Length: 396
Image: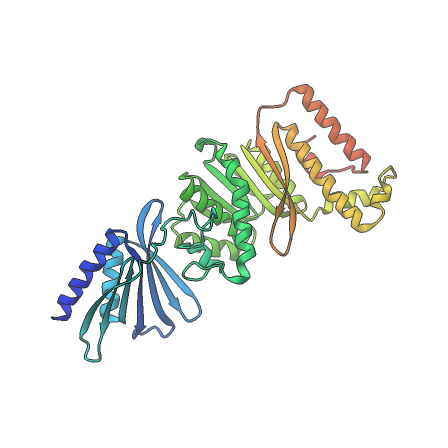
């Protein structure tokens, strides 16, 4: 049989396996092309935005490159690659293994082996893996961010990060589900950093909940903005965008959900201010570095019943944190938000954080607002706080 006939037969088999959803993976090996760094290519069938694709992982010596193609284009590329640059192609299906190989005389051979044990079919979706809301398999962004390897296994050093990602989504999931699709159109993640949580949130919104939310990550470091936009493009996350800028200077009057995790000191106040003035339906912040209120407490040194708990630096620091975040929760309540304050376990650099959640409700009555405002003022006086950045921003 000629090489052409063998390739045609190989294509028929490949198309049949893919179309019947029996494909486990395709492996291309024994590379003889011009790229000295390329080792192998692995192909899986994935579902991106509810559309079947073939995901190609180009395994190089020091990095992996990902491409997602529609099914027909992907099949054509596999045939081209095995005809020219790779000496062997292995198709692993649920119940059989097909091998196409070149011999020393450039003749093709096609072998089919029926497996004695049926292989499990990998899921093409991102849910239901190890009961995690964010699955590790078939995740381009988790691999690009060095959380998982090319086949979706979580790196040992990234286990805590992976758990943090899923815990974050577990917290946000019921909050978002309580909102209508109209209330989740625009989401802004301020201080998005390297984007681990931003990508995970987008993945959950679009893949699991089937929403069409636009997600914007705001990050001051331009190199991280470039990195994250590149990964978003690789993953075909076309409604995810990262922009360079500070929380203080970012403007978006139409945000439905505002998130700011680990925004340092008064940057958290800037984020809350932006969320309140945009009338966001949901505000979620995890503050850190509560310097502004601590400086106020140190400067004015009020003596009262709690002085014994604030005369030591470590106790003063902890009280400053609690007072700062309690005032933030009160400010949210003043503007009609139902507040929750919970512990959020983060990564190794900031092991534990308070997570302040504000859920937009009906506006407070004038009488209730006066009560909350009075409580804010009393708290500030009691702890010797003459200026509180968030209340100044909101003219309280």
